[in-house]
Amino acid sequence: MSAAASSTREAPRIGFVAQVEHTGVRTSGAAVSSTGLAEGIDLFTAAEELGFDVGYVRVRHLQGALASPLLFLAALGQRTSRLQLGTAVIPLRFENPGRLAEDLATADLLTGGRLRAGLGSGYSAHDANYARAFGAVPGDVRDRVDRVLHDLLALLDGEIVATADAHIEDVERGTPLRVQPQVPSLRSRLAYGAASPERAAMAGQLGLGLQLATLAPDDGSGRSFEQLQLAALEAYREAARAAGHGEGHVMVSRQMLPVESEAELERYMTLLPRERDARPGIAGEHAGQEIGGRRAVFSRIVLDDPGTVARALLADPVVQAADEIVLVLPLGAPAADQRAMLRTFGRHVVPHLLTAIL
Figure 1 (cartoon, helix red, strand yellow):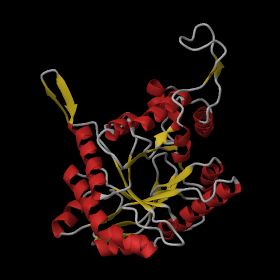
Figure 2 (spheres, one colour; figure 1 turned 120 degrees about the horizontal axis):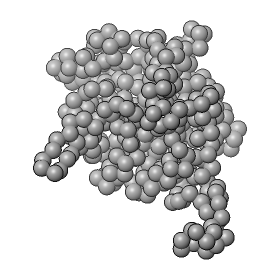
Figure 3 (cartoon, rainbow, N blue to C red; figure 1 turned 30 degrees about the vertical axis):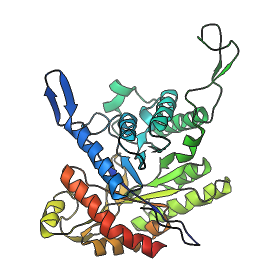
Figure 4 (tube, one colour; figure 1 turned 45 degrees about the horizontal axis):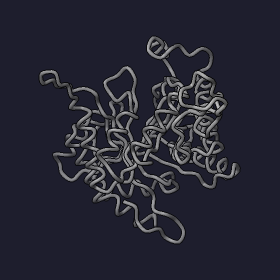
């Protein structure tokens, strides 16, 4: 959906983020397939046909939703040719940096250089639930995440990890060894999902992109959601410039759903988060708890005609400042409704966004 750039600004990328389920497994003799994964592939291929620039998958562990996003995206790479494919986000607390570096680079090769992986801390409470499967995290979780992140980036940058000896087959003794495969361009397409100005600045300093979600930490200042996110965005841009990375790349996601009929409106109202009022129009920002149990401020939700959705997005200063605008598809939406949301958004909202922003 990219348009020709004006003299002052390039067209923002237009994307979406979806939750793909493993559930719906069917068997036929010895064959086993997942209707959930198949529906996910169909959704992304439909998005490419509709002209979307990028599609992201949520990552969940110990749940019915996608737990191995890079395997899924590698499969998608064989079914799509243009769509950028990303994650929002891979929780680093559960990852081994060496294995993740291998998987990221391999998935990028299989997608033809279209991988846009988002990384982050992920879950921040109830770590005991994940200890048996992924190992306990001693000490501060943020320290663990930072170690994994910095080791991952070093490995992707080609750090020499060992020197070949007689036990490394088909490699001359004394050869420097690096994690393989090495894909130099991959590093520039990684992003970090940060909510606070401090973490956003870290992403900018490291030369990563920034992913802004539909919540921001409640710092007790009484500032609105948009003000809190603008502070993170500005801290990111400043740090990126200071580190010599230019303006960086900011992706912002919003749950603003266009409807074209009363029937769609009635169905979509049931998909809004439980803590919101399920009614058409604009539901104001909401203070509550994020997944880790910390206080957070959630963005507005818009459920209305395409014109109202477009105006709400254009009135959002964070959206105006972003390089990429991403529609968040609601959890639990049937496959047909998800495709309808993408179709309506792409055909009747995006043209207004591109015309106004450019």
